[in-house]
Length: 391
Image 1 (spheres, rainbow, N blue to C red):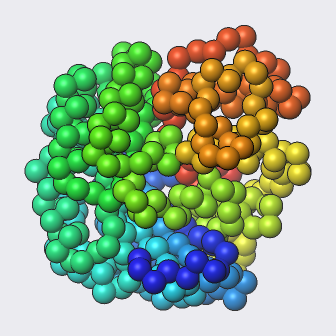
Image 2 (tube, one colour):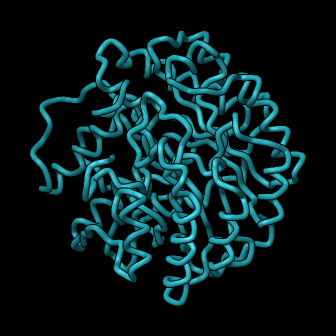
């Protein structure tokens, strides 16, 4: 990603790939395991949507293929979509990958297409924990995948990790972090396990994570990653110098982005809108020339201002010193001239601080008290609100 043109305004493109071979126990995203026969038509529809939108989009400074399992799809089909987009010089182009599907040939094809960042869904380096999460790969596949990425010459590598499974001891988590650091990724995303309604994990109370255990594991992650030279730039994201994910930063900074595919969100000129949830409905809309948009919202100036503060609160850049009420000052530390950010213990209470912020601006009644809170997962632009149920 050298030679990036930083004079252009940031603009992202997200392409949602809704296909998987298996649904993990914690997954609530718009993905399906039984519709592989739709892949060809779906990717052709994403390409057509990219063609239709291209004239109205500025050059993309970042492109992100997420899912689902993007590396379940032939690289050439991702390349067909990529070819329809105007890319800024040095644009960041990321593909999410499952380790069990990574091959050296696949990574070489990605590199030839212009992919310069891989986000690898590792989650854990302990086999028992992977089983408890419903993952299908084993730890040995991770090392082989990292080797394939590096040998292909892809510039940057992210490892996704998840902590908090009931089957995971603190020693398991420490080993996962140590093994991940040994693989020398440029970036790590470290998410607390979240029991989403309607998932196998969410429906089984005995498998819900313990808040105190989650807090201990977050603090351990922060300690070990900082000690290995990774800087926390958002509650759940650490990177080496210059390796922050530019696409994710769009979300934290209320940037503009276009969503391709079913259930993908877009944000343009203060308006958010999202596409129909299922691949069948998306294909049908594109093939008939109809709009795939299922719904939209537009925040007023005050709402956008509060949202901007809530998002900035999650980052190392922090918020203006006078933006937060007095009762959370003990959870803050200096972040630069005139700014404050959450301390590491404050990050454990980020959602509650955000609620206090809303209350102080008259947006919400005050919560009764702070409660224990795990480090929250970063927002995704796959719609949680659906125009129709998954199926």
